[in-house]
Image 1 (cartoon, rainbow, N blue to C red):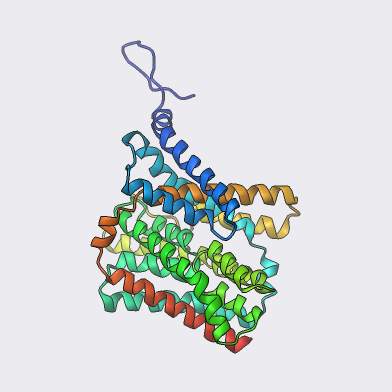
Image 2 (tube, rainbow, N blue to C red; image 1 turned 120 degrees about the horizontal axis):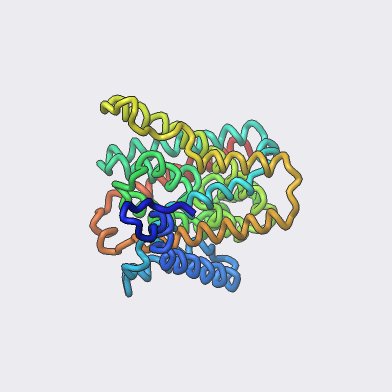
Length: 350
């Protein structure tokens, strides 16, 4: 264990890292307890995602009793570090061969959903005069994979959390509009006369969170769930190149702004995204036992639930109302845009 040196010969003090860990312990414990409670409720109500339950719990705590000062450091740690660790483990859900088996035409549709969804949302954000940072986070969250994409983008565009409120707002919008999509997509698919497989592809191509896709796919029934999840995971896979592109953009902006060569610039691919890619490769090419995959899934859900609770603790209803209607309008339009691109693509290749 590292210690700080003392000139007066007194007993050395523990390293700052240990002190930070002690300060974070209460908040970490609360976040993990909330994750456990959310997972327990999710088992009792299989149609409800533990991640959604966790963020709702966090919002309730923040707007009723408030987060105790002793827990603030640990809750902040959970919102950042646990979320990135959860993104890493998310890679264990992806098998590249399953995605390739979707076929070239559907993979092109997935790229169009992500690319068109992001570009269209950014343009809409400019028209609505929504702040550019918040617009970008909404674009990533709604076009790629919800809260994980918001966190991934924020990790490189706002590494010092100077605009943390934008991250919290984007995650709240993902939860709100993604949850609304759970009943709407199955109902719309039935009204439009779509078969179960096509409806599943539409759900996977348009809904924001994986858990929300699972809920919608289960509601559609038949073979919809399997294809919905694979299409959604194909969108998740595009998180890595998008985050890398955003990181390159940030490096260029830093240089244009006059950052010296010795200053710290964001890596082209952040460490947590390298971990995500490594998990994808491991799952694809290594014969991992079912027990390992199951444990990884439980750990991923627990970490993300703890992170969602922590992010929920940052949502103040008063502050969310103060952002005005424009981000909500942008989120609604982004949802419609991504859903429309996905619907058109499924109809073309179906």
